[in-house]
Image (cartoon, rainbow, N blue to C red; front, top):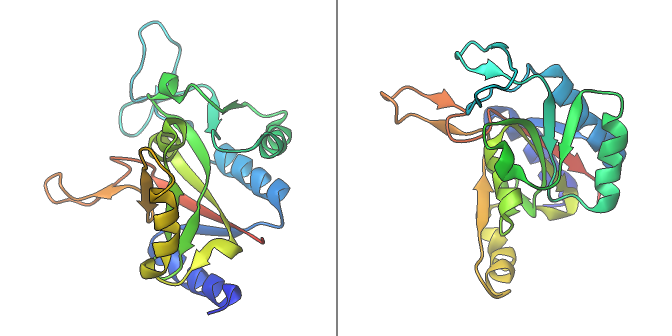
Length: 208
């Protein structure tokens, strides 16, 4: 299939994952989208509140909410991070590129590049060798994956070349396969979202 045909598969299947698909007009538009998504969500729950800190009113789950908003973007280049800074200017959003271990209690949004996207299952393949990148995909309430159309593949079997390249580069290799938000049914067999990771997955599709 052509890349546009693969994009059509993603458009069709994303809602059932569930994943929110946004087709950006470029990186600047993608960063504006990330900021808009963060501003529209309720303030992040603080799962590990610290004594003496000021927090907002409790959420529906009983956790105190944070007074500020945070976007983690540890994998962005300097140029990409500057575009994100420009998009967030004048808002109450704080940007993180490192030190995510200091924010394990929770942050609003993460922005991560996917190395590939499997169209058939809408699965993002992410090189997770860097701890900061892995924490970003796990701790945020909303995960935003940046995906270039050139990295779309049809089925998981077609990812063999990419996987061999990642595995053969030397040293430890950690790769994540992310399909939709975090979900589990191991608590009294009741389905729940966000227990082990993000509550929402947004896929931002870019030309290139």
